[in-house]
Image (cartoon, rainbow, N blue to C red; front, side):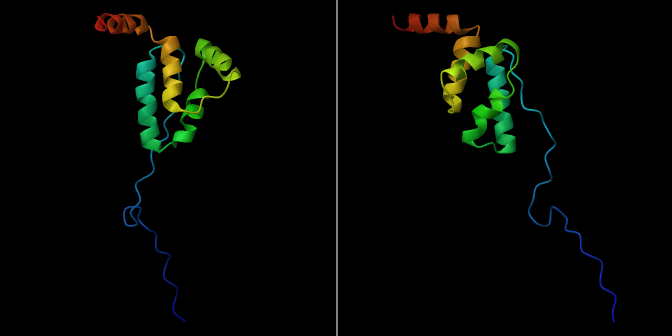
Length: 110
């Protein structure tokens, strides 16, 4: 008898949801500046709520060039699923400041 009211559109603020996040690409890694790359990865993980179990997979999918070749050889020996261990391997291979860090640690032992 009475016309049905128009469907009520819910405002995303009224139901406690955050507005959708803009789509951001995962940081690529080509072997340059692993510390900056790690910081950008950590920000991405925080923004998108990436679980611990998926962090290394997200990263591995975004390696290129010599870093991708290196990663392939590492993963042939076994999949690394721990993010901290993964990052340590990346730094051991690609961090150009590694030598100076080791020398500082050596000097500190005296």
